[in-house]
Length: 297
Image (cartoon, rainbow, N blue to C red; front, side, top):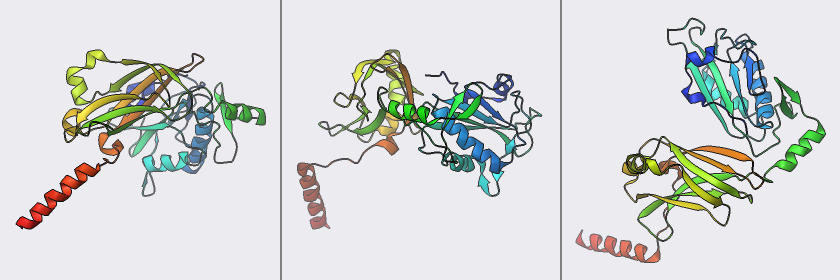
């Protein structure tokens, strides 16, 4: 697994410290590349990086890694952020990626007015192989994205979901404690995750105030038959316990042959919580309460 930087913490100074040439992790595209061409290059980069363990694509810098003006912050009326999403969707299937834009703050002269530096982080994928817009498959070979041979494509396909566990977190109501809301870590394929370490960034409020010293949590094994459950909050107290903003769930783990993996996922109880199941007894009590209220009215 490649050790990719956290792009959401980048500032202009980080651009000045980029490698002086492209690598197996970094690909640069000059500000002079028209957006219609840049769209296709993004799709090829997505295919190559996802098929090769991940990487970072930067538009608005030249081949030497130097900022050279930036790309337009809009394409017509469309924001460049939406435009990037559409460009990445040209690649099939879509896997995990992050987009960050660095704007001109007035303190630097190398980013033009109404221009931005585009940074796309393609995370490691377990859905390989990925096909670019031109119906071809690419891999990262050194500092270049090269077309993959039929043999390589078949080798990539054979690796899909064979050893890497695919872990996901979901907020749901506790199956036996109706007032408890919990976070459940599940494996959505047949692989086994070993020596799992779980932490957050930032921590949910309740955890941050009382239990930070207990993290990262260490879980010996997670698979389809052995999910991990952690009680998060009481029903109705979600905002106080978790907060209004999503928290990043970070899972580090090993597969059965010892390869190390890392998964990051934003968790928001307001979006992830499954519908609450109401038992017959609760439904009956609610019905009686409504009937009594109707009689009084």
